[in-house]
Picture (tube, rainbow, N blue to C red):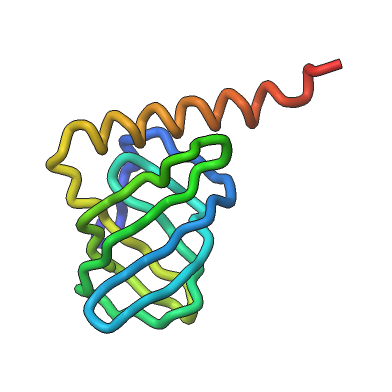
Length: 114
């Protein structure tokens, strides 16, 4: 089953602004799918497979952007690309988990305000 991946982490499918920086690359975009291990981004600056980027993720309601020092581009299709996080820093992993959990609760709980 080449190319078949089992998703082991909770994922957030919500539009979140991101800035990405790499070797001669400065771009902005939207994260469309965020997990503990990576994300799917639509961006305005071209990247290529294997490029390592630094990400600044602007989480709604959080005054400090989430900084990810190393995100490796795994696939590219037009202006869309996928990155894997090199999350050896436990505090970054914990913050991503907290963000996903908070935003998922907000997303699912927003309809019962009244």
